[in-house]
Length: 102
Image (cartoon, rainbow, N blue to C red; front, top):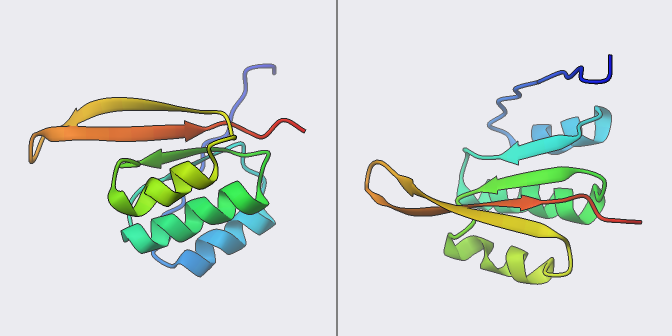
């Protein structure tokens, strides 16, 4: 089937488990959300550095900790969307990193 898909929700509180899953299973898209900002930084950095064929979605990408990621991978095609968080009411940015063209 041309339009078939398989959605896996993997809730892992351990960064090392998330990275092991990236290396052991095939994913097309990875959404990086939840956990500490430091864990999310390490995971998005791992994806962008070692998994160029993945589409990665980083929620809350406007946080200061992620500025260096956005700058380091400025040559990678990406698109950001700004919305509003409900509580507290404030702007929020989500960035999509598209697979690298090789």
